[in-house]
Length: 200
Ligand code: HEM
Ligand code: HEM
Figure 1 (cartoon, rainbow, N blue to C red):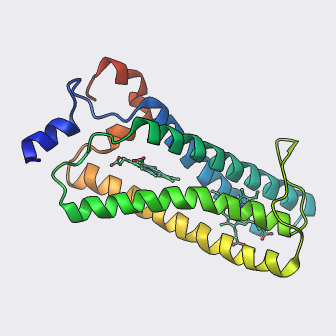
Figure 2: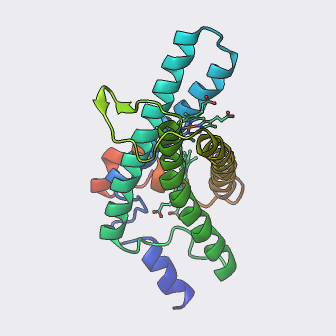
Figure 3: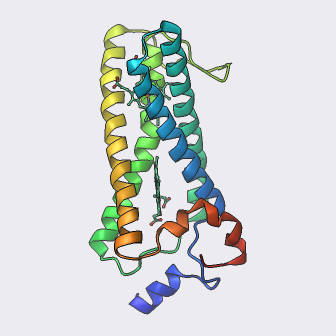
Protein backbone atom coordinates (compact mmCIF):
# COMPACT_ATOMS: atom_id res chain seq x y z
CA UNK A 1 0.00 0.00 0.00
CA UNK A 2 1.49 3.41 -0.95
CA UNK A 3 1.67 6.38 1.41
CA UNK A 4 -1.35 8.16 -0.12
CA UNK A 5 -3.54 5.10 0.41
CA UNK A 6 -2.16 4.74 3.94
CA UNK A 7 -3.21 8.30 4.79
CA UNK A 8 -6.67 7.73 3.33
CA UNK A 9 -7.03 4.71 5.60
CA UNK A 10 -5.89 6.82 8.58
CA UNK A 11 -8.31 9.69 7.94
CA UNK A 12 -11.67 8.35 6.86
CA UNK A 13 -14.22 10.27 4.80
CA UNK A 14 -15.64 12.11 7.85
CA UNK A 15 -12.25 13.78 8.30
CA UNK A 16 -11.83 12.57 11.90
CA UNK A 17 -9.52 9.99 13.40
CA UNK A 18 -11.50 9.31 16.56
CA UNK A 19 -11.58 5.83 17.98
CA UNK A 20 -15.14 4.55 18.61
CA UNK A 21 -16.55 6.49 21.62
CA UNK A 22 -17.18 3.37 23.70
CA UNK A 23 -13.53 2.31 23.31
CA UNK A 24 -12.43 5.81 24.34
CA UNK A 25 -14.74 5.76 27.38
CA UNK A 26 -13.42 2.33 28.39
CA UNK A 27 -9.81 3.49 27.99
CA UNK A 28 -10.33 6.46 30.34
CA UNK A 29 -12.39 4.51 32.86
CA UNK A 30 -9.63 1.87 32.93
CA UNK A 31 -6.85 4.45 33.27
CA UNK A 32 -8.70 6.18 36.16
CA UNK A 33 -9.26 2.88 37.99
CA UNK A 34 -5.64 1.73 37.51
CA UNK A 35 -4.29 5.03 38.90
CA UNK A 36 -6.79 4.95 41.79
CA UNK A 37 -5.95 1.29 42.57
CA UNK A 38 -2.23 2.08 42.66
CA UNK A 39 -2.77 5.19 44.80
CA UNK A 40 -4.87 3.21 47.31
CA UNK A 41 -2.25 0.48 47.74
CA UNK A 42 0.55 3.07 48.08
CA UNK A 43 -1.36 5.13 50.65
CA UNK A 44 -1.94 1.88 52.58
CA UNK A 45 1.84 1.69 53.14
CA UNK A 46 1.71 4.76 55.38
CA UNK A 47 -1.55 3.96 57.19
CA UNK A 48 -1.15 2.16 60.50
CA UNK A 49 -4.76 1.65 61.67
CA UNK A 50 -5.87 -1.93 60.94
CA UNK A 51 -9.37 -1.00 59.76
CA UNK A 52 -8.01 1.75 57.50
CA UNK A 53 -5.53 -0.68 55.93
CA UNK A 54 -8.27 -3.27 55.41
CA UNK A 55 -10.59 -0.71 53.74
CA UNK A 56 -7.81 0.52 51.45
CA UNK A 57 -6.99 -3.05 50.38
CA UNK A 58 -10.68 -3.76 49.83
CA UNK A 59 -11.03 -0.68 47.57
CA UNK A 60 -7.79 -1.65 45.80
CA UNK A 61 -9.33 -5.04 45.02
CA UNK A 62 -12.55 -3.48 43.74
CA UNK A 63 -10.63 -1.14 41.41
CA UNK A 64 -8.60 -4.11 40.10
CA UNK A 65 -11.65 -6.31 39.60
CA UNK A 66 -13.43 -3.52 37.73
CA UNK A 67 -10.34 -3.06 35.54
CA UNK A 68 -10.48 -6.76 34.71
CA UNK A 69 -14.20 -6.59 33.82
CA UNK A 70 -13.71 -3.49 31.65
CA UNK A 71 -10.77 -5.18 29.91
CA UNK A 72 -12.81 -8.25 28.99
CA UNK A 73 -15.52 -5.94 27.61
CA UNK A 74 -12.95 -3.81 25.74
CA UNK A 75 -11.19 -6.79 24.16
CA UNK A 76 -14.58 -8.17 23.05
CA UNK A 77 -15.47 -4.82 21.45
CA UNK A 78 -12.02 -4.46 19.90
CA UNK A 79 -12.32 -7.87 18.25
CA UNK A 80 -15.77 -6.93 16.97
CA UNK A 81 -14.53 -3.61 15.51
CA UNK A 82 -11.62 -5.36 13.77
CA UNK A 83 -8.66 -3.36 12.37
CA UNK A 84 -9.03 0.39 13.02
CA UNK A 85 -7.56 3.16 10.81
CA UNK A 86 -3.86 3.70 11.44
CA UNK A 87 -3.34 6.92 13.39
CA UNK A 88 0.29 7.35 12.30
CA UNK A 89 0.52 6.00 8.76
CA UNK A 90 3.97 7.51 8.16
CA UNK A 91 5.47 5.33 10.88
CA UNK A 92 8.10 2.80 9.83
CA UNK A 93 7.20 -0.88 9.94
CA UNK A 94 9.51 -1.30 12.96
CA UNK A 95 7.82 1.50 14.95
CA UNK A 96 4.41 0.09 14.03
CA UNK A 97 5.47 -3.33 15.29
CA UNK A 98 6.75 -1.88 18.59
CA UNK A 99 3.51 0.10 19.13
CA UNK A 100 1.41 -2.99 18.47
CA UNK A 101 3.59 -5.12 20.76
CA UNK A 102 3.26 -2.56 23.59
CA UNK A 103 -0.54 -2.49 23.16
CA UNK A 104 -0.67 -6.29 23.25
CA UNK A 105 1.49 -6.32 26.37
CA UNK A 106 -0.76 -3.71 27.99
CA UNK A 107 -3.83 -5.84 27.24
CA UNK A 108 -2.03 -8.92 28.64
CA UNK A 109 -1.13 -7.10 31.86
CA UNK A 110 -4.61 -5.54 32.17
CA UNK A 111 -5.91 -9.10 32.12
CA UNK A 112 -3.25 -10.91 34.22
CA UNK A 113 -2.42 -8.44 37.04
CA UNK A 114 -5.98 -8.45 38.48
CA UNK A 115 -6.23 -12.26 38.14
CA UNK A 116 -2.94 -12.64 40.05
CA UNK A 117 -4.27 -10.28 42.75
CA UNK A 118 -7.47 -12.31 42.94
CA UNK A 119 -5.52 -15.59 43.26
CA UNK A 120 -3.20 -13.97 45.83
CA UNK A 121 -6.14 -12.95 48.03
CA UNK A 122 -7.61 -16.42 47.65
CA UNK A 123 -4.32 -18.16 48.59
CA UNK A 124 -4.09 -15.77 51.55
CA UNK A 125 -7.42 -17.18 52.78
CA UNK A 126 -9.20 -13.85 52.34
CA UNK A 127 -12.82 -13.36 51.42
CA UNK A 128 -13.28 -11.63 48.03
CA UNK A 129 -16.32 -9.64 46.99
CA UNK A 130 -17.27 -6.91 44.56
CA UNK A 131 -19.32 -4.27 46.40
CA UNK A 132 -20.68 -6.97 48.71
CA UNK A 133 -21.32 -9.58 46.00
CA UNK A 134 -19.22 -12.63 46.99
CA UNK A 135 -16.84 -13.92 44.31
CA UNK A 136 -15.43 -17.44 43.97
CA UNK A 137 -12.05 -18.26 45.50
CA UNK A 138 -9.99 -19.69 42.61
CA UNK A 139 -7.34 -21.43 44.76
CA UNK A 140 -7.11 -22.94 48.24
CA UNK A 141 -5.41 -21.07 51.10
CA UNK A 142 -1.67 -21.82 51.21
CA UNK A 143 0.98 -19.57 52.72
CA UNK A 144 3.88 -20.40 50.33
CA UNK A 145 1.65 -20.03 47.28
CA UNK A 146 0.37 -16.70 48.64
CA UNK A 147 3.99 -15.48 49.07
CA UNK A 148 4.89 -16.44 45.49
CA UNK A 149 1.74 -14.82 44.11
CA UNK A 150 2.47 -11.68 46.11
CA UNK A 151 5.91 -11.49 44.44
CA UNK A 152 4.38 -12.06 40.99
CA UNK A 153 1.50 -9.64 41.50
CA UNK A 154 3.87 -6.92 42.71
CA UNK A 155 6.48 -7.45 39.97
CA UNK A 156 3.87 -7.51 37.21
CA UNK A 157 2.04 -4.51 38.66
CA UNK A 158 5.21 -2.37 38.63
CA UNK A 159 6.12 -3.58 35.13
CA UNK A 160 2.59 -2.59 34.12
CA UNK A 161 2.94 0.87 35.72
CA UNK A 162 6.27 1.45 33.91
CA UNK A 163 4.80 0.38 30.58
CA UNK A 164 1.82 2.71 31.09
CA UNK A 165 4.23 5.58 31.78
CA UNK A 166 6.16 4.77 28.57
CA UNK A 167 2.87 4.50 26.62
CA UNK A 168 1.67 7.91 27.83
CA UNK A 169 5.11 9.44 27.15
CA UNK A 170 5.04 8.04 23.59
CA UNK A 171 1.53 9.43 22.96
CA UNK A 172 2.64 12.88 24.25
CA UNK A 173 5.86 12.75 22.19
CA UNK A 174 3.86 12.16 19.00
CA UNK A 175 1.31 14.81 19.91
CA UNK A 176 3.46 17.65 21.26
CA UNK A 177 6.95 17.17 19.80
CA UNK A 178 6.18 15.64 16.42
CA UNK A 179 2.84 17.46 16.08
CA UNK A 180 1.06 14.27 15.01
CA UNK A 181 -2.52 14.50 16.31
CA UNK A 182 -2.65 11.08 17.96
CA UNK A 183 -4.23 12.11 21.27
CA UNK A 184 -7.47 13.38 19.75
CA UNK A 185 -8.26 9.80 18.73
CA UNK A 186 -8.49 8.91 22.42
CA UNK A 187 -9.42 12.29 23.88
CA UNK A 188 -12.66 12.06 25.94
CA UNK A 189 -13.74 15.67 25.31
CA UNK A 190 -14.25 14.89 21.62
CA UNK A 191 -16.70 12.09 22.31
CA UNK A 192 -19.69 14.30 21.54
CA UNK A 193 -18.18 15.58 18.28
CA UNK A 194 -17.41 12.10 16.94
CA UNK A 195 -20.68 11.52 15.17
CA UNK A 196 -20.59 14.93 13.53
CA UNK A 197 -17.13 14.17 12.16
CA UNK A 198 -15.73 17.48 13.50
CA UNK A 199 -12.00 17.99 13.72
CA UNK A 200 -10.74 19.57 16.96
C1 HEM B 1 -3.87 2.78 32.64
C2 HEM B 1 -3.59 3.56 31.63
C3 HEM B 1 -3.64 3.14 30.19
C4 HEM B 1 -3.71 1.90 29.62
C5 HEM B 1 -3.72 0.55 30.34
C6 HEM B 1 -3.74 2.07 28.19
C7 HEM B 1 -3.82 1.05 27.26
C8 HEM B 1 -3.97 1.21 25.90
C9 HEM B 1 -4.13 0.16 24.94
C10 HEM B 1 -4.18 -1.34 25.28
C11 HEM B 1 -4.26 0.72 23.71
C12 HEM B 1 -4.46 0.00 22.37
C13 HEM B 1 -5.89 0.16 21.93
C14 HEM B 1 -6.22 -0.72 20.75
O1 HEM B 1 -5.67 -0.49 19.67
O2 HEM B 1 -7.03 -1.64 20.94
C15 HEM B 1 -4.16 2.15 23.89
C16 HEM B 1 -4.22 3.09 22.88
C17 HEM B 1 -3.98 4.43 23.04
N1 HEM B 1 -3.74 5.08 24.23
FE1 HEM B 1 -3.68 4.24 26.05
N2 HEM B 1 -3.69 3.41 27.90
C18 HEM B 1 -3.64 4.10 29.11
C19 HEM B 1 -3.61 5.46 29.27
C20 HEM B 1 -3.50 6.37 28.25
C21 HEM B 1 -3.40 7.80 28.43
C22 HEM B 1 -3.43 8.53 29.78
C23 HEM B 1 -3.28 8.34 27.18
C24 HEM B 1 -3.14 9.79 26.79
C25 HEM B 1 -2.27 10.60 27.33
C26 HEM B 1 -3.34 7.27 26.23
C27 HEM B 1 -3.28 7.41 24.86
C28 HEM B 1 -3.54 6.41 23.95
C29 HEM B 1 -3.64 6.63 22.52
C30 HEM B 1 -3.48 7.97 21.79
C31 HEM B 1 -3.94 5.38 21.95
C32 HEM B 1 -4.19 5.09 20.47
C33 HEM B 1 -2.98 4.50 19.86
C34 HEM B 1 -3.35 3.83 18.56
O3 HEM B 1 -4.48 3.35 18.40
O4 HEM B 1 -2.44 3.76 17.70
N3 HEM B 1 -3.46 6.08 26.92
N4 HEM B 1 -3.98 2.43 25.24
C1 HEM C 1 -4.95 -3.32 37.61
C2 HEM C 1 -5.03 -4.07 38.65
C3 HEM C 1 -4.08 -4.08 39.84
C4 HEM C 1 -2.89 -3.43 40.04
C5 HEM C 1 -2.18 -2.44 39.09
C6 HEM C 1 -2.39 -3.83 41.33
C7 HEM C 1 -1.21 -3.38 41.90
C8 HEM C 1 -0.75 -3.73 43.16
C9 HEM C 1 0.44 -3.23 43.78
C10 HEM C 1 1.40 -2.22 43.13
C11 HEM C 1 0.55 -3.79 44.99
C12 HEM C 1 1.59 -3.45 46.05
C13 HEM C 1 2.60 -4.50 46.19
C14 HEM C 1 3.59 -4.08 47.24
O1 HEM C 1 4.42 -3.21 46.93
O2 HEM C 1 3.51 -4.62 48.35
C15 HEM C 1 -0.57 -4.68 45.16
C16 HEM C 1 -0.81 -5.45 46.27
C17 HEM C 1 -1.89 -6.27 46.43
N1 HEM C 1 -2.95 -6.42 45.56
FE1 HEM C 1 -3.11 -5.57 43.73
N2 HEM C 1 -3.29 -4.71 41.88
C18 HEM C 1 -4.32 -4.89 41.01
C19 HEM C 1 -5.43 -5.69 41.19
C20 HEM C 1 -5.69 -6.45 42.30
C21 HEM C 1 -6.85 -7.30 42.49
C22 HEM C 1 -7.98 -7.50 41.47
C23 HEM C 1 -6.73 -7.88 43.72
C24 HEM C 1 -7.65 -8.86 44.42
C25 HEM C 1 -8.87 -9.20 44.05
C26 HEM C 1 -5.49 -7.39 44.31
C27 HEM C 1 -5.01 -7.75 45.56
C28 HEM C 1 -3.84 -7.32 46.12
C29 HEM C 1 -3.34 -7.78 47.39
C30 HEM C 1 -4.00 -8.79 48.33
C31 HEM C 1 -2.11 -7.13 47.60
C32 HEM C 1 -1.15 -7.30 48.76
C33 HEM C 1 -1.35 -6.26 49.81
C34 HEM C 1 -0.39 -6.53 50.96
O3 HEM C 1 0.82 -6.40 50.77
O4 HEM C 1 -0.89 -6.88 52.02
N3 HEM C 1 -4.89 -6.53 43.41
N4 HEM C 1 -1.36 -4.62 44.03
